[in-house]
Length: 98
Ligand SMILES: [Zn+2]
Image 1 (cartoon, rainbow, N blue to C red):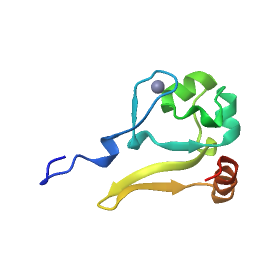
Image 2: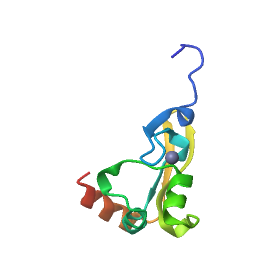
Image 3: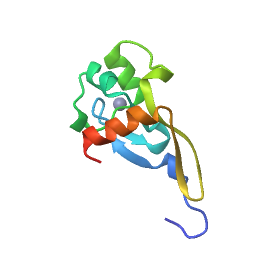
Image 4: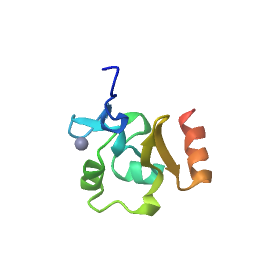
């Protein structure tokens, strides 16, 4: 990391895709509904998927209604995420033990 200009956080690697084993950046970070995750044959502990990899597993396009939290941008403080369904997201966090 250089001192003068930090690389954009959103371009940095966040995780490895469970499906294709390639890196996933913060920009691609979404949380989908547990039932959507399960429909893709994923366990809660299975980690992360690219959106395209998730859509391949689901055999359909991801819809806004499938998403609980989505990346919306970043500022100097970090990544900005938007919670689309707070109630469902809190339930998800409880279930995950966060
Ligand atoms: Zn992938």
